[in-house]
Length: 185
Image 1 (spheres, rainbow, N blue to C red):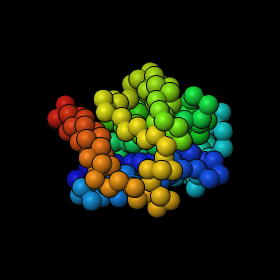
Image 2: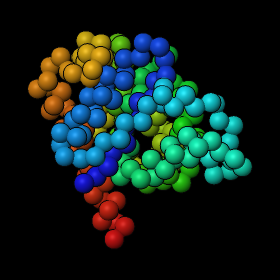
Image 3: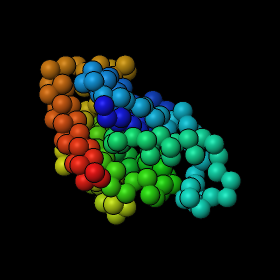
């Protein structure tokens, strides 16, 4: 059973992207997989000045975060789009790790309050993840007008439509997980 870590990356007051993270956590579990929701708002990481592997005395929460990413078969970034880009909290945790991202299957759920579903954030994060050699699934999950799409508990306004979109997103991510497993053996 694959373990999928979901990074809820917004640390902003009133964040709406966390709704999508909750939806994905529930969908992954309902599909029979293990979900590990990692909420960056709860972790409250400082701005890192050095990669984890070069830190002399890393904080226990930082080491625990890295281990959760290492143990995951795949990672889903749920990122809002802020001013045409990703929030600093996303870049902070991407840059914190090095080896943990290499060939790690990654899915991107890009979220916005507007009509374009975080497409600019998606492109920024995609470029960054390619650079560090993460294996990004070809199928993103774009969520436009997030507050109209999901309530605060992550329940979709149109369950059938979101079940279909989420299944396609997860199926492609799980295909990457299976490919990595086969290549490793």
